[in-house]
Length: 338
Image (tube, rainbow, N blue to C red; front, side):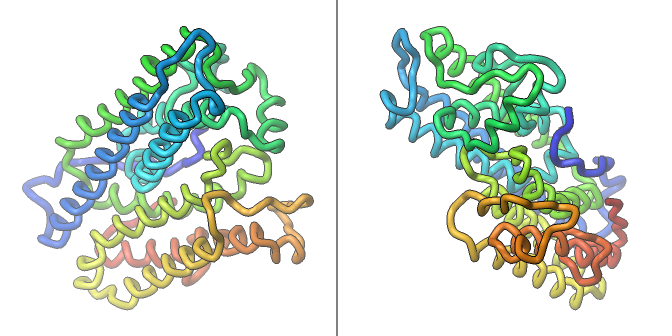
């Protein structure tokens, strides 16, 4: 599968004979607490989607006849998506198979094999498989144009039969619960390597620009719910939370100025996101060219976010968020490879 986030793999290892310092040990314990909490939130929201699935009749369910139930499932989906985005960098490194089954996009799944039953928890699965159904009545023209051009494309729809509705609840929704539960049980006994934890979050920040770039072709991750900007906010918030676990260690090893630079970088990115309301990315300019965007297009709302991320996500730009994170890592002996 061609999962969007292509974070470099890292070794997850036991700290031989204990961690090298109290700062390192404290950082690892903090990361464990952060990731565990968000996995719990993910699992709870996944269960909430299943619990709120309506009692179906012979013609299934939909957003008109079962508006309250669909609204409740969408709300739980939002909570699940935020929880996952906060820890995506860690999960992609730790559990690549679960990352794929939970967070792969529709095009990635059907690029491997066709899926004619989108409800049964096989083939297309996870947060976007559920999202594609819950917002089946509101896919954008750009998304429809992109997906309908794919081989083995199947039109998104609400369950239209009793069997499809049952498959959604006991198949697709249950698979999401099972995968989230497995993440939690597999994560709980792990003793993390500090370098792996830090590198995962740097990789996640470096991929922020890819999340917005995919929007112009209709390939954005949370494209059905119009939730991609909210994804990016949650990803950034989670990245800062994990960075915070290392901050005291970095400062203690002489990186006080670098810590300030990193925090300034997070602030710059979040300030740009917060300048725009809602969960959706701004509209992509009609003639957008990511390889050589025009000044006019860069001045649009979409262009402002893209331009900022093109700088802040670039490890080769001095003073960028990712560059500062890489430099800060070096003060505590972590060499980040992107």
